[in-house]
Image 1 (cartoon, rainbow, N blue to C red):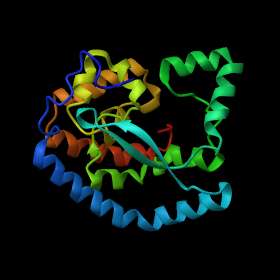
Image 2: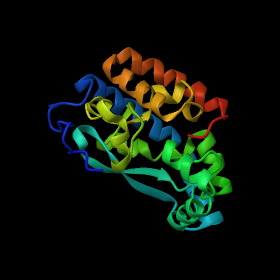
Image 3: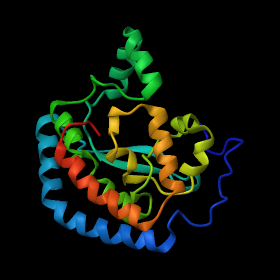
Image 4: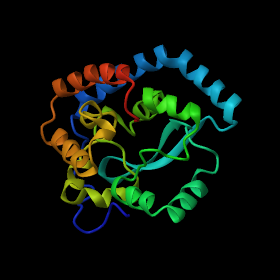
Length: 219
């Protein structure tokens, strides 16, 4: 999916949602979090290398502000041949193919390693995205970052998505995460953009801490 398709006016926004105030909060929060999380990140890197080999960090193309694509970082939580495992699983399992078409995720993903399940449930796999925040690819709070082909599922709400940087956390993550269906996630992301304020971001960041501590939903 090309985000510059007809109907999505890429380039219409001069600045990302929130402007300078949101960016300053992003830099402050990300720098503090990165300093505090460095020992944990080093330990996770070592665990991945020991249990499943290199690489420890995985990058995947996501769509950012005004349709700009960027490499989104995460700790690797899947087997090395994840693409082949996915293709085989969908080809041999019609129900899985339907689930993938509807949600772009599986409830029980065969590609995820044992350590990967732990990292996802705790959201620790997303810690490398603090680097994306510092680089300006992402914000601490925003819509869930999507792959290019996925943006077409946002329909008219794609314009809202393209107005801001995608987030390390977001409103959808603190209101159900994978327990809600895909259209609801899109609606939540769109509502966040349309009703944004700096205080909304502060509340979401605070609620994220408690959501992560619950340790009961995959990221």
